[in-house]
Length: 594
Image 1 (tube, rainbow, N blue to C red):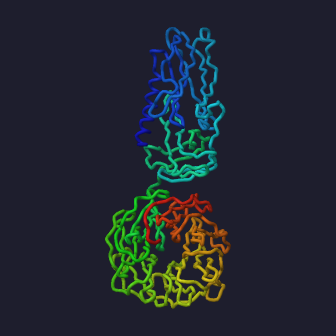
Image 2: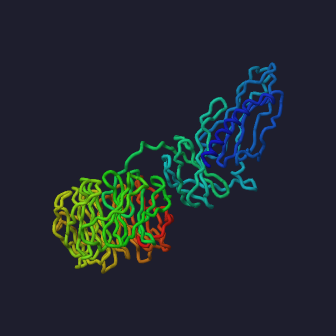
Image 3: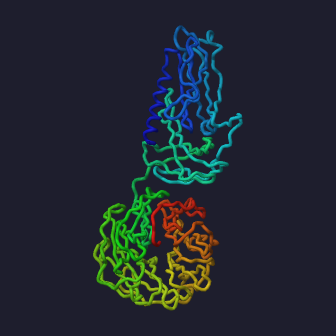
């Protein structure tokens, strides 16, 4: 509908301009028609020969759902040997003052050909016009919203945030194309409506249409309009053409929310019917998500997904028979999937699986067996649907395992053993079938799964809930300490969920926990690889789960949680690395666990 309306808008502008510029029967020459932020039009300029009045559009006239505020001509003719006087009315679209503020200056003043006959009609005058929506009923200026900050450039299809200040809710926004005028015609004049996801007095989330036919790349003025239709002063913004389709870096470690090859995030969860369900962002970086799709199965675990070396996502679950099952995208980013296939021949599973991608591209799955030992199995080759033999890595686990890759590509697994401490085991070389023995790091925790990540300096860090303080604690690789790990360090807070780690665009780790108040809290490194951390800060919400974090293709960290109604909710940084977040958006679903 928007595309059709805009096409009609552009055609009407061209037709009206052409008609008004060529009305010779009444002797009128009209030079310009303006379109306003509320879709209204104004016709400017012109001259009448033999003082003929123009019976054109008047204020309040209808036009394609908008209106024409008025038309203006100078009312002076110049009898010049029976021909129209050569006069051009020029609209000065001064971006810094006029159109930017929704007022318009019109100027004229081409000297007549015969200064003797027309010396009184040199038209050395200026008019300033302000449309009625800038005023209140009593004639005073209406309060206007203001734009505090907006990105300098966005791409077609991109979702972005605009900070605003307004006494009343801002309910719409508009892009106004910069003019390119020649000989009374403006072939580029257009108005594109942007509808915020939610009205607000402080922050708007807007999405640029992804069709270049609706928003040709280039410079625009961005206006926001309050519920009374009063616009702000504009901010200049550049709309860029989408880059050549690119492939985004793929996470090497599995999660419930992962990034597709085309940059869109995708979430997987166990539904109330115990089937596998999924939803994906409607476009890269968007806050809107697709309809949830049932991928079938009978799950007895939370799912975990990771990308194959060729970009195809693959999901792993524990079935009702306690066997590990998997299914995969048929092509990278596709909505078409294989059926469920069991990875058979190994011990039964007792908890949620974990998965990561080896340096050679082979996926490798880890799980706590029914006997509480750690087992692993890997693809025979990168992207293969056949799997190697199962390996018993021993240990006696009371938590599900978590896996991370060292800087040299060696996988390292962390879990809570029967001593209630954090222990780890690692590959002796990258991609190897040979593993170290288990080594304990200490700490005092419970069956909540730990989480781990790699700092920008290459050192690993593992986070867990301290059972004594109920706060968040960590161990960090540090060659200067015996055993190569620092002692347990407390970050405080109180948590009732397993901690999860997100990684900012600059490499800073950010930890998400469900607090004792059932809100989502986060805490982050003050600098990449830093030993100093922010205070724990609530992000709100009423949660019944921990968080699944992931980084958007534009660098903004996002999380998905399960709410009190068992639906999923999405929250995201307002900009990459920011401590400011947009707030929770419901994205639907009915999850039995998350």
